[in-house]
Length: 191
Image 1 (cartoon, one colour):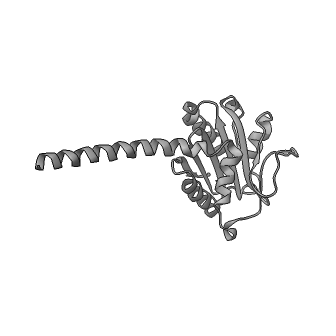
Image 2 (cartoon, rainbow, N blue to C red; image 1 turned 90 degrees about the vertical axis):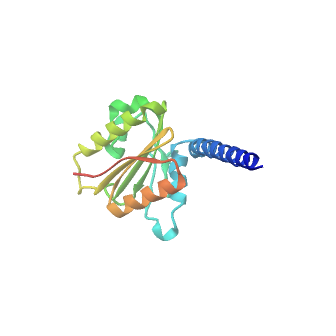
Image 3 (cartoon, helix red, strand yellow; image 1 turned 45 degrees about the horizontal axis):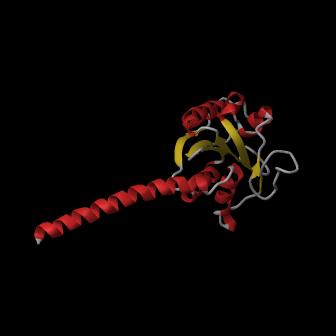
């Protein structure tokens, strides 16, 4: 009887462990499946803010169909110069992405700027993180310096954001709460 009970316990442990593994895999796929594009990824994070945590934001590029004065907006990847000057995206890396969105502090981009970039191939995530980090750190800043830079990987998206410490830390916390599989790939002061 003891052998039968022990066998049942071992079997139930094996089943529960395998179920945890598939749940993790499902959760990983679920995170990115929940965002149909970069704008939706940022919108879900912005929607998780309490009213008193929110600040004046704008998103998207300057086109009428993409710009938003209330939250994230789609950012065209065809204008590499604008991607660079606004979001700090390295022009030579544009071939790695097929979509982008932005969310920025309405009064001063150095207070908070965020770009979400959808990768054509998730295998390029580390290379894009490195290129973004180097490119943003080497920028010539106008009107003061942002305090901090954070770059996260969320499935087949790379999200970079920089600005004032407290605003960046809050966005980082919200991103990781909304997307449980988000991985912080870089976090450092801007020199």
